[in-house]
Length: 154
Image (cartoon, rainbow, N blue to C red; front, side, top):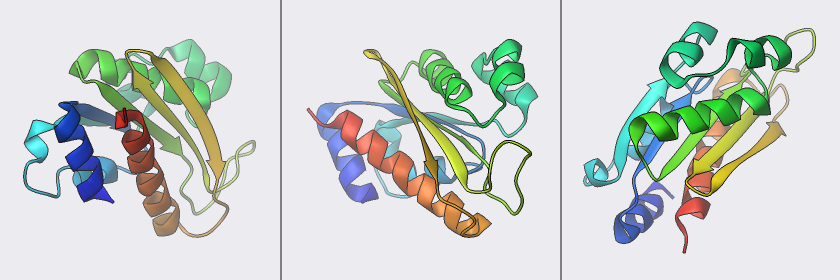
């Protein structure tokens, strides 16, 4: 799928950036895995801590306190911040609980995504369940790439 994403972005002359938490750079790695990716990939942000989300992407402390890092509200601010700071056409953001374990209010395998373009920001949450850390991260990476692909289509 990544070759199709890169080809579509290159054909439409679109650039992409990503803001990742639980995937730790897996989306950026996938986007830069093939030759020619420098034409479409602007930069990536791995903002694992709340401090990094605030400092690098402009996520508001109040949003983190009110909703927690694993929330659509935070993912939206991550995506919007990445889009603005990178000057890209498309930004995807991911924040989740890959596991093992969960928090008091959020289950293992919950991942929040956001996609930002100049037309706005959309978000969604997927509960993958306790399928294992690696599988949650891989599924999240693949879903983020699909979001980018969809956003790049005319």
